[in-house]
Length: 255
Image 1 (cartoon, one colour):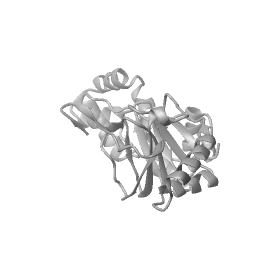
Image 2 (cartoon, helix red, strand yellow):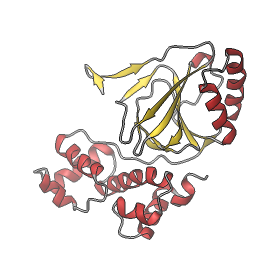
Image 3 (tube, helix red, strand yellow):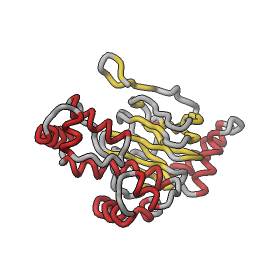
Image 4 (cartoon, helix red, strand yellow):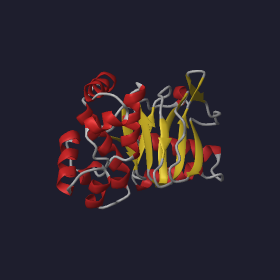
């Protein structure tokens, strides 16, 4: 997580061209600790679904999406069901593309194959340089509203957040959750508002929608997703999703 109260800074070694690739198979439930990179990063999974959490949002990435993470952005990356992750690191002063904030990118079939080509050990430096130029031309941001709920730090408020993260379908009321952590409902409500900037009800909605995204990306039917994240009916889940995000769940990954 951090050492001596500071976020770990990771700096993959530079290569002969602008990009350096890391490749790894992540088992189900695996998470990297919170960290940042000196380089920009493009997080992408050739198989499976990645989740990236940044201070500004919760990003879910099927193979048709990647995330640009600017250098110096604190984040953590993981997967619910397992994934083959490609970490693409870009030296800032050698990259012709710069996004100041995390940006979701569209990965079409051509970009998918180019990423795989760059990862191959048989790719020469000259081939890599030509391929990278095409990749930079193909980077295509996708406008989406990031979904997610900041975790509060006050111990009792954080404990409630952890309980709900472990089980988004938990139906306990604010009063019942307050009792579980030996505090009052009013104190708990004030804690969520003060530390996250939104009410407990809004925070819970964001948590449930964020929990639904990896399931949505993996193709699980909406009816099953709704039940797993705490909605009594599929229509209630779809309505909440549309109200918060502006599109239906079915359109979130196809825009």
